[in-house]
Length: 171
Image 1 (cartoon, rainbow, N blue to C red):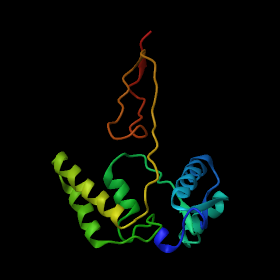
Image 2 (image 1 turned 180 degrees about the vertical axis):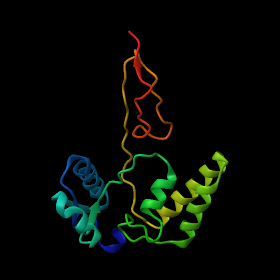
Image 3 (image 1 turned 120 degrees about the vertical axis):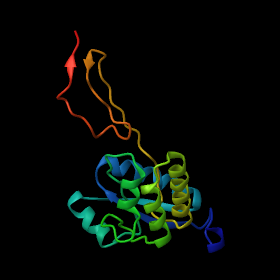
Image 4 (image 1 turned 90 degrees about the horizontal axis):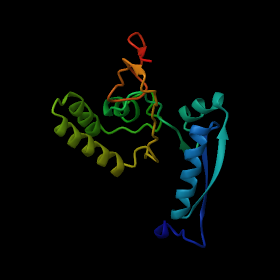
């Protein structure tokens, strides 16, 4: 930013648009705080939900903070939905055929260590390309009582696999 003429005495104002609900607004506030470190003074523009998705589809924002609503913690779902050329939810329009090929390779890789290496390679490439940077990863958890029996929790998400047909209480 200093090479562009910005610094502590000359800051760049920017509007940060996001959906007007806490899971969007809260990270936007964190982003605005982080932008101060690089001489950007962010102003929050909360957008009504009915207008938010049309706004991002039109790319009608200077900085837009969006969340990726994913129920599965797996690279396939994230990469294909958010970064692969032509994906409907690739709102920024990022497109890199090399990354697409790497995404396909990691998707087919059965060796978990090799797959992790491919995923890290994709992540590095996405960072180098400034492709829809990730601000933070939220945490989620579930709780249950020890007398609840028969619940199988999925290894890749807290949101899928909640089938209660086999649940029972042990009093």
